[in-house]
Image (cartoon, rainbow, N blue to C red; front, side, top):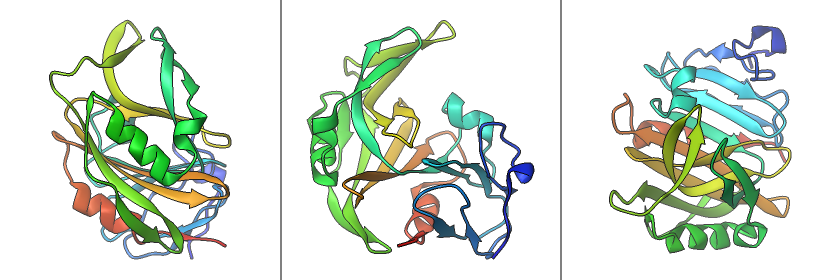
Length: 219
């Protein structure tokens, strides 16, 4: 198993991330809880976050700046997430909707009820013993969507969800993206595995899902 350490991380906010990964090598997170063991099938994958509540992998021909810009595919794992809503569009200030995120099934149902989302029927799933559901999401092109204003730019968002400590994030479906969410019961909360497949970016959901479903969680 390859060692890891903060000095190796190329992302200043990435904690103990590793950066570029070797194909077929087994890695383990150092900070993320629960500890993850993972590997990637081909060269070109990178690990850009290993913090107490956030873990991030970016596939070949995609990059870290594109993750925040909404132009790169990625795989994110979050210890705990919940649906949320925008309370102030400027700067995208949010608040949690804890009742909607009480279980994987409740969270999937919340996504299905959002008028600005096209959502698949949730399917039962199990990843290394953690049980829950998986659901695919896309924004509706003509829907009246919520929006954030960041650096003076309006960004349409649908199906907003946020991190519950120790996880820290505010993520949503944007136009031109398919998001696959694995919602898994863990520690009385909902652990999320987020796969973002940007239409214009290299890669696809099959590539991301193959890595997501091979993750191993420490007991």
